[in-house]
Image (tube, rainbow, N blue to C red; front, side, top):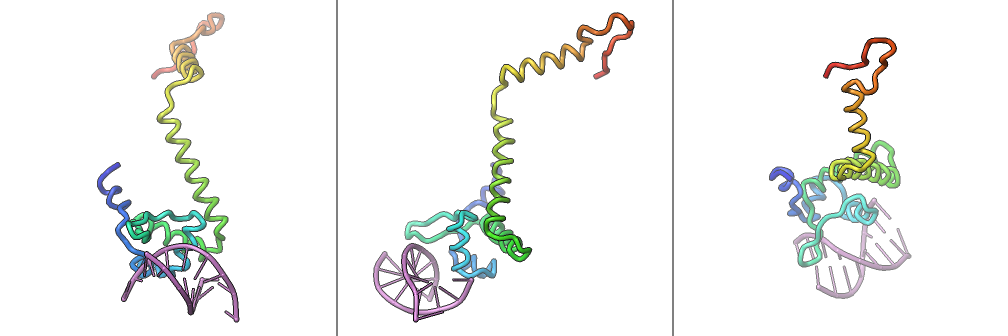
Length: 128
DNA sequence: GTTCTGACA
DNA sequence: TGTCAGAA
């Protein structure tokens, strides 16, 4: 993770500041948290501490709400996005399976001509 | 003074 | 969602 994103994820804002930055009431901000839409950190005194990313998320939630999307809908959107990212990460981290290796070897085999079609006298080789 | 949780005329 | 209470 780069320093820039690290700073954006630093939770340093108390709810009072977040209220002014988002024009949301503390009631609304806490409610969205209860719905799992945001998950601010807590400091020693159990006070919610928000990061710049949290601010963006809250502003985004507000926009969705203004566009008529309900809480359930927003939940679905974030759930789907999280799933999409999980899939991408899984694809990156997963070591090659036997199936992957077979597919790669077969592709390479075909790329080099494979069994070809000796009958028609022309190979199916494709240039790289 | 600010924020937290829980509750509801 | 607003707002009040009682505590931290």
